[in-house]
Image (cartoon, rainbow over all chains, first blue to last red; front, side):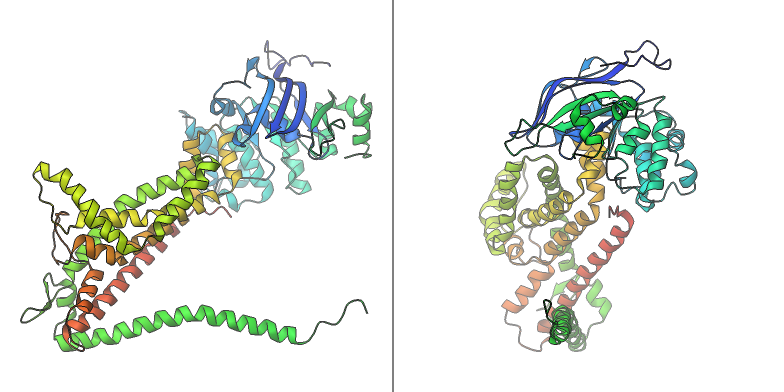
Length: 271
Length: 306
């Protein structure tokens, strides 16, 4: 597997920011992911695609230990972040500030637009000028011009697309290094989707983005690397287990897939 | 014909159902109007027969219906009602809210499956049993604790009433609040965890504000229940109408006064007999004010998530 060279912006940093080694995840006794080994490059957009139930979101949620919130979820294998083991006995609270997350359904807090953005920074003890941080984050999320005159209105008064950009601004406000996006556009109309995609492209200079998407066109449009997950056909006990079929640069994966299952999926023959 | 014509009477049935449902809803309205009307008419009768003014009633500080001339100042029993309401709220609101947060955010599924029904069982205990509980257990314990400190604890005392009424209304707060807190969408919790929040921050700064309207509603319901509680208070706090800050002496509340008058030998149509309607109307007014206050609070603090 090719590892892209570190960009100029990241200097001497390791080009791999997140990595898993033989990672398996269970929900209760159901194996959801089998032995995934993947290395997410820094300052790139990595897309996770694959049919429903193949564990794309599960994999994404291993990176910020969000699966800890689900009773009965457990994992085996290693997950590292900047070379540091994060799958063991670490405090997920500290980790989650550094690895932000944007969810499928826009979920702004039932608070004002301002407080939505300031909330995360506040609980993490941000000491700087809050007004400035809120403005910067909203500008970065390409939402400032639309909301600057109504910062004290409820975040829920915004349209779906604006709410999703508000959620991105809220994530940016805690200054994470990685942003995980779990089907961020699936609840949005095409115009809002285009805006969020532009925004992702804009953000990748400063952040590493991992996005789960059902939309192959979207994966093609926005991502540098694509991982295609598949259902394990060997597991025939009625449960669905995901495995990694292929992980390549996006151009390559869509034009010249190495794995026959990937080819079948991207040409629409399965999934 | 595969699809038979829908019979005509369905439309009639539909409007019949709608009328029936309206009637059911209207019964409650009718009842309220009826209660207020009866209380109002009898209260007017009371003021005519007792020959006292409304201010003498509302602001009179002595309640001696058997004195000559009788004194019908409502302040002492209003005071008693407030003592019990405030005292029991000080016990029930914090404990109830904290156990709701525990049950909804912290408790493992198994603990919750046992604790919640147990708490709700408390609400099913007849209130007179709580009264005995106060008299036989709470007061002796208070005596054992406080008398060595030189404090005299009367057999009937306000503190004991506050304790048992407080325990009695904990399930109202905890059960209703827990329902409200657990119905806060999971997406909000995940958003907060995703920003690096601890469980405590998620509970107190996202979930609680989002469910605040329901939590406050449970508070108001609990306080109203404390204001209206009768039998436990009769047994715990006795029937001495007095304005005091000492919770270790006997007091009388508005509801216990009504019990006293009904249980006594006041004959029909006398001022003493009619006074219970005036007290009843005042009690109704207290509850109404509580509801209005809760409405105002809600409008201020509401964080609607839908």
